[in-house]
Image (cartoon, rainbow, N blue to C red; front, side, top):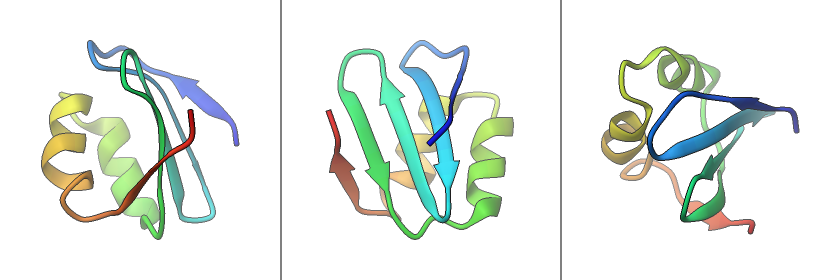
Length: 68
C-alpha cells in the first residue's frame, strides 16, 4: 500500500487501498482499519487536524489492528 507523508504532530503517514486505511503514528506504531469507505479517507486527508479526526471519527467507528 502506498503511504503518503502528512504534516501532523501525531501521524507520520497515511495509506488507503480497497477499504483498508493504514495510519503510521509517530510514537504508537502502524495500524490498519478495515471496511473504511473512500469518503472517510478523503475527509481525513482534508481534515484541519488529522489526529483529532482519527480520535473522533475513525477510532470509535472502525476496529484497528496493529501492524508494527
